[in-house]
Image (cartoon, rainbow, N blue to C red; front, top):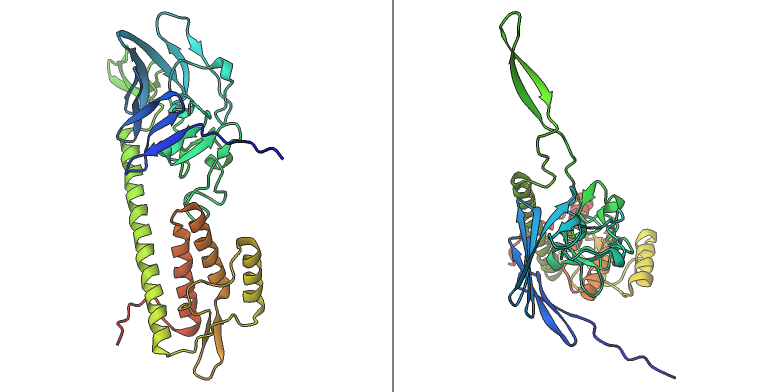
Length: 358
């Protein structure tokens, strides 16, 4: 039986900010990437250096240098920052066309570094490292190669692999985490002041001008708003983590106090048993891994007040998934908080309140 030997095509490296900063190929000089804030700015590969010139996100030109040779190229883009034409003065204009999802034929390529939506395609796979290396987008398959950590309950949407939720014409995704609207071409209005020939009175009319430049990119105000929204989301996730930690500590304290009877096995309730059975088959786990977590809540007489096994099955699913991809799942914290609110509603037990151990 013959076995195929696997070869490493490319090795990627990231900085402490999780940005892709270099990748290497066998028998090829390492390619280093550099950024200006969140924008791709330049790269160096052996003696070859490339630099991108842009203003407020609008791509303008590219500079290439190798030893004593230098070459500049002017770039023409559309409203999505996709490079459509490059003019370097020495050759004929180079044009290119993309599919709605960014695929292009290899034989119609540009000498420019950037491509669809102003992103740098990977020299090995042709995929785009959105979010400066957060996720790879495959324009041929029209989807991401890896799931979004903000799915399914966050901004990533229900489909963790979808690109722009199936609408790349009206939406863009430069971070790889969620879609953002694209500005449309709107011709601005300007005021024209004139004097009537009869009354000599000054009249003011509003006219449209086709000569006014159209700004096709996100301005600084929009970028500021995006940073503000990202900061709010970060605070929200930190609050989720803090609440989930308090819930877990309170459940452990209640188990140690013995105030409520704790069942170590799931009760034979239809909904809980069904949820656990499905979760066992799909996500391959036996029971909730934390022995301090109470699945069934009982009163002092042993009567079942509430069974939360369906919540625990969901939590186990997220835990199992996060171990596989080695990434935090913020939906896990949300489910824990919903679980605590559900328990409080039916049993009056407030797991959200921070209690001190006696």
